[in-house]
Length: 44
Image (cartoon, rainbow, N blue to C red; front, side, top):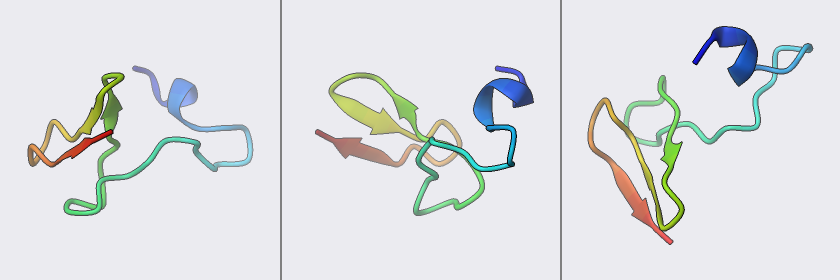
């Protein structure tokens, strides 16, 4: 994704950041949220 798709005009974001890494976003897969960098997963 392009940077302009991740951030709003004021620089904020609606995406959840990884609590383990802190510098990457969690991908939403419907039943879970997953970090591709460190493999952290939250099941919903």
